[in-house]
Every structure is written in structure tokens, then in C-alpha cells.
Amino acid sequence: MKRPSLLDRAVAAVAPVHACKRAIARKRLSIIDSGYGNYGANHTKKSMIGWMYHGGSAKEDIEDNIDTLRQRSRDAYMGVPVATASLKTLRTNVVAGGLIPAPQIDADFLKLTDEQVQALQAQIIREFDLWADTPTCDADRIDNFYSLQQLAYLSYLMSGDAVVLLPMKQQKGQPYSLRVQLIEADRVCSPDLYDRVVPCEVYGHKVQSIVQGVETDADGMVTAYWICSRHPLSNDAAAQPGGMKWERVEAYGKATGRRNVLHIMTRERPGQRRGVPLLAPVLEALKQLGRYTDAEIEAALVSALFTVFIKSDLPSDERPMGEVIPREQLIDEADPRSIELGNGSVVGLAQGESVEFADPKHPTTGYDAFTDALIKQIGAALEIPPEVLYKQFVASYSAARGALNEFWRSCGMMRGWFIDDFCQPVYEAWLTEAVARGRIHAPGFFADPAIRKAYTGCVWNGPARTNLNPVQEVTAAEKRVENCFSTAQEETAQMTGGDFTRNIRQRLIEAKLKRDVDEIVHPQPMNFNEIPFEDKQPKKTEENHA
Image (cartoon, rainbow, N blue to C red; front, side, top):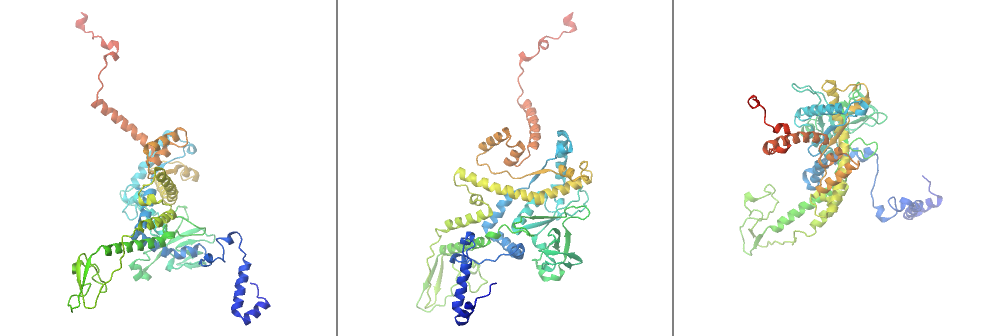
């Protein structure tokens, strides 16, 4: 820091206020604005001087605030309709009833024929359904794999991330031991609820750093997750803080390299260890919108009530205002300060008392326009067009189609993230067990990672995009396939969420059944001209020959 000059020190001693102004002016001259200094980084404009800012690392900006963000996000989901609609809309369009696997084995690398690949893929699908269609795949034994996808994705949106464990638990009558255990984000926390950013020993383990339950080594690589035995926000945990225990789960097994923990999250910054709830950037707007809506509802309700007040100059022994309404009709009987109005009530006032009402003029004519403008901003931040959020397509066809296309672009990106973080790792863990148990024959699966990768290739099909004009969409799909811009498999997945190969197989069965039924219901009349000549001649018998 530059030392003040002799003149500055002299002025400061005689006139401190003037010296302060000189220092401010000198500071402004030293940062003559240029480039971003004229705009976003400006320190002299009045509009920018009032901008309170403070930057930090990912830990200060995200991890240190994550608990508040989670709780407020969940509160908004449970009480603000727009927040609920946003998360449920994404869940329905990204996951819906669950993403369905379609194995894509690399036949060329494995040197398999098309018939061998089709038979192996069909066998994999049958075995996977045997595991995924039952609640036994869930460690809680409540949901099947496809319901677990919905729960995991909604939890990820609401809390910012979700952690999944892959324990092995043998159960009688079940061929597979793999279980999927979902852990809510709050339970993954640092031991004793405080972070360590310097090397230390925790419960007998030497660690380099633990931030919000995520342990990293000296290079910043994630090595383990610390999971609390109880939810930190539960009543039991608050009553007995000493009863909480933490389990250290390694991210990857040391002996096999198997993934023990799946962390479903989307990072925004390098060095970030925990995810940010989707609603975090719009929480303030959502809360204010919820308060505004509640106030409008209350005002509309009050203006709809009709109560008559009688003012008399004579002494009256009528009950005080607020006690006139029958007890069974009171809304807030427990609060003695509450004064309630009723429908068609007649209230007597004591001498000298009077009532004045302001004219609220409800419903407010600007309510819809204001909320629409605010919801547009919220939707833009969440990448959800207002037409999709409202479930109303009242604009033109081209505008509605453009909104849907933009929304599906976002949904496709989010679906890809979720598949990489959850669906595909679970599928690979299951297939590994299936091969190890001998239920799936895959030579070389454990010998070479490249071979294992060739066997585990898979495409996950989900809900199809909305078609505003199905005829045009089908025609466009046919042209894309005809000109090799796309494949029948891709178009089927996009338009119906199905599997083209499975559809063809099913169509063969249906065509055969329909042909058999048509022959019975509508038999073809015999055409005598089509009968061979030798079949038209009468058969010779011994009697005719004689």
C-alpha cells in the first residue's frame, strides 16, 4: 500500500474531512474506468456503488450455505404452487414412469453375429426385469427400480444432490443380491457437523479434508463419504446429539475398484463438492410470489364477506366484536386477539365505537399480468417455458412448438446427466453380478475393461416428446430415416419412448395372430379357376375303370 504524501498527512492533521475527500477522489482517479470497468466492474457510478457483493470459493459460496438452501427449497416445494409445478414438470418429462434400458452390445468388437447379439440382448433384458420389476431391488423394499428413479431425481432437484449406496444383501428366493439404497442429502455431512479443511484424524481415519461429508485427498480427488446414522434435522437427532454416529463409506472399493457410492449432482464450479438445489436462484422470487398470492386470497375473501355493524348511542350489553360469530364457525378460536368477520353477520357496537373499512377493490386487475411476468422470469431461470409450466398452449402453433423444442432440449441434457450418474452405474453393477453368477454368459467380461465396456453398452429410453401435429411428426421421422439422418431406433425412442427392435418382434407376433383370426372370421371363397387341372378330374375308382 502506498504511503500518504507529506501534503496528505498535513491536510489530514488540519482538516480530516477534506483529507478523506481527497483520498476518495484519488482512489477514483486511480481506477480510470476502461473495458468492463465502464460497466459491470464500475466502482464510481451510483447504480453500481450500491451493489453489495462478496465473492468466495465454492466452499464459501455454496457449501457453507447449502443447509439453508436445502430447507428453503423443500419448504417452497411444499407450500408454493409454482415451485411444486416446476419440480414435478421436470420429473415427469425427464424420468416419468422410469427410463427403460435397451442394451447396445458392441458386436464388431466382440466378434459376434447379429443373431448372437440379439439373443444375448434379449436374455439381458429378461434378467434385468427379473431384478428391476420387484421391490427387492430397493434396500427399503418399497419401490421397484423405476419408482426409485423418480424418487432419486426429485430428491436431486429438491436438495441439490442425492447419494446412492449399492450394498449387497442376499435374500431367499431372489437370484440377485444388489440393492439400491437412497440417502437424503442432509445425512451426508461432516462428522460432528463441522468441516475439516486441514489434515487431521477423524474417528481413527487420517483425512486431508472433509467438506459437507465429502472426503478428498491432497489432490482434491473424492475418496469417501461420511454418512450420519440419523437425519440431522430429525427430532431424535436434536434430542440426542451424542447418539449420532458417522459411517465412512469409500467411494470405490480398494480391492476391486467397484463403485460403492453414486453421487447424483450437477456441478456449477470447479472444486464444488455438493450440489445446489434447482430452486436456489429463484427462492426469493418464489417466496415473494407465494406471499403475494396468499395476501390476494385473504383480501378477496375479506371483500367477499358482508357484515353489518350497528352503532347505538344507548348503552348495550352485546358481546364484543369477534364473539358474535358462532363458536363452531370461528377459524382462529385459539387466538384471543383475532377479530373475525362472517357471512351475513350482524354485530352490535358499544356506545362511541365505530368501524371504518378501506375499499380494497378486489380482485386486483393487475394480479394476472404481474404474476405472469414474474413466472416468466422464474421459468427462464429454470429453463421451463411458461407454456409448459402452466400446461396451457394458447399461443400460435409455431410458438408452442418452439417452446416445446427448447424445453425438450433442456430435458435431454438433464436426462443424460441423470443416466450417467444413476441409471447406467446401477445397470453396470447389476450386469457385473449377473455375469459373476453365470446367469449371463459374457466371455472376457472380467479380463479386459474394453470387453466389459462393450458388453455394458446401453441406451435408456424415456418419455417421448409432445407431438402437436402427429401426422407431420411421423412424416418428418420417415424422411429422416429414409435419408439416413436418423435411425428407426432413435425415432421410435423420441416419438413413443419405445424400442424399435422390440416393436418389430411384437408386430410379427401380432401380424400372425391377425392373419389366423382373419382366416377364421372371414374365410376366402374358393376360386374354381385356381384349382389345378388334375384336381378338377373325377377320381378313378375300380368300378369306373371296369
